[in-house]
Image (cartoon, rainbow, N blue to C red; front, side, top):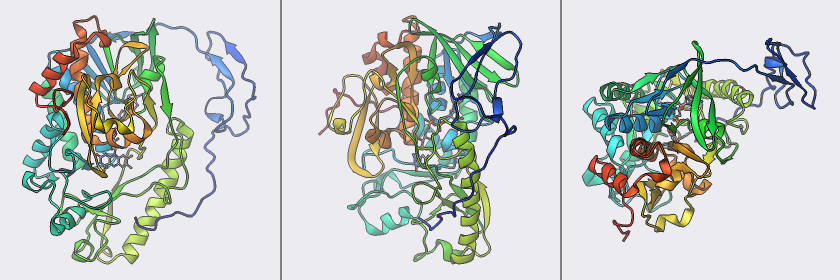
Length: 475
Ligand SMILES: Cc1cc2nc3c(=O)[nH]c(=O)nc-3n(C[C@H](O)[C@H](O)[C@H](O)COP(=O)(O)OP(=O)(O)OC[C@H]3O[C@@H](n4cnc5c(N)ncnc54)[C@H](O)[C@@H]3O)c2cc1C
């Protein structure tokens, strides 16, 4: 990774009323008038004074069969799987676009769809995206015949695209570099064709549950606060926002943020043999363009709590400054970059993990040797050849909420296994499984624990997903 360690800058104080110094013992004010509490004048980390919001009536804007919250790669796959099975499916997203980290988060590498030894382990909707991207010339990946190859020339070729990771002995993986604009376009086309009701610019603000059953999800947008009353909810927020509102248990961590960016106008010297391509930056679709995976320990200035908006704000600003310094350094010192320019900076900061559900099963490191009767998806490991996790349905469900599923990077795993299950192909695989499971639960009054998992597995396999499980013993 390039030497992008930024010079620490003074802490930004982002307060509109810096004189407010709220008390450490919160006191509760209540009333019908919206008297302002400390509000945006809070110093980060201080205890807020409490202001009790008055009860008010919200418009119920719909009662869909399935509500998917968060339209990253997992949420898009979940909504597609649900709508294609005939369910009235809503997908809400707080940002202005779908795709999440795989879109304008610029994490534009599918790592991986294989087991590291030449066998594909993720297909289904993820493969459908690859096929669509291929047909638009918006993806680069090794052909099937090359997966698992240990030919050094092949390995070097794909390393330049950011598709070779992990300790030796290395092999060519079924991994894919893709163009994010095309990924997002494919998502819109497929969502529309499937009849998903998509609402952008709308975030989930709260969920109301009674006896472990979510009856209402409250969303917030320019239209104000609105209520949605779905039969089944799929939380694909990446951060587990919905399952937290619903009272499910989670584990959470702090992380060093990333902010990937792309540069264009890179000359031959920057992309040829002997350059840093494949080390500190990668080739990406379109001639003369590179993807720079900036950030993480040693580069990002500090760890952030991804659930703290003040921390995130500080990270957005300081990472951006550091990225601009890195762009200037690359242009000045890297052969082939003198005429280059900054194409774009990730619009979603790179948070590798935040909350993980503590579900009905927590997938563990040694479970790569296990088969499960309720496996509904599989994933390889991007840095470890021969490691494949079958993912039990129970990793998508919570013991304390009966009409909730989750998918993507916040499913129930140990921190170690999260390294594998958070990857985009795995997120799409669990997303697809959650969407199909949500529909299966509709016949059971929305009760996700009553789903006939054997039938769900057959359904997923019939639609092209790879589910493995104990009728596909590991060798
Ligand atoms: C730096 C970095 C490098 C990575 N490298 C790779 C790689 O090379 N290859 C790979 O395959 N994977 C990689 N990953 C992992 C992968 O990118 C993510 O884990 C994956 O994209 C997660 O998908 P997701 O749909 O679960 O979550 P996200 O992509 O985070 O999507 C969640 C969506 O939910 C929305 N949302 C959040 N909260 C709310 C709310 N309250 N209401 C409404 N909407 C909400 C968000 O705006 C977002 O669109 C990397 C991750 C990072 C951060």
